[in-house]
Length: 294
Ligand code: R5P
Image 1 (spheres, rainbow, N blue to C red):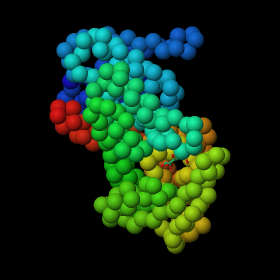
Image 2: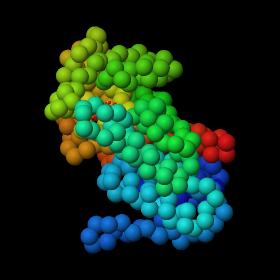
Image 3: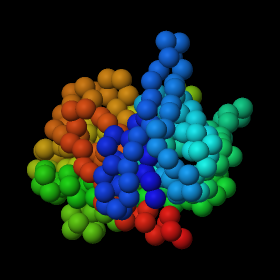
């Protein structure tokens, strides 16, 4: 097995290779003056099983295109099997048609990867595990939320986990029970047309509690800001936030900090700066090993 970083693996590929006892290398890459990507692999992969690692956390379209180009290069170099690990999969939230006329973007991305020649795909915390059925080869979702939350709870002493959305509440409840801390959730309502947020069910009393707001991902930060404001209004003291994927779109970091959040914890599925990154490579390697030999 050779683990190959495409253009954005944030150090995860080399750590995973170490845990799996596999070789690691990277594509040489550059960007042409017009913005197009160039890739080249200076490694003999003939007859080898190859695991391509590419996160799509920023410049999503570019990272996706580069993954397709990498599959093409590896196939051309006569590798045996081409597998993929996507630490953060872009377009996963559009996993169904919410309004008439929309595409199912997750299906477009996953279908293209398989059609290009990838036979197995692992995704760290896709938005919903079921959407991986759009990938027609074998696939797994790798769960690292517990690892991230455990690290954040150890560092902050949080006593209560808060799920900012009913969609993630079942998972947050499960992690809270395993870690022996309390939990609560609020119901977030998002206007499909203008994206604005409002609260359905609010939080219970949190007087004097240190809390950790836990989500699967942070994009604009709106969800975390809403939950933090609600927690403060219910008496919480010491608010920190954790999410598997820290996308932190423009201005999100400042918005979250201004809302009174101390630290932002996340996995190294992205390369977000100024946050507490928790290395999930050991868990990912442990999930990948049986999946790739199967
Ligand atoms: C939504 O379903 C997700 O679980 C996240 O809550 C959401 O994507 C976070 O987005 P934002 O940071 O833009 O509020």
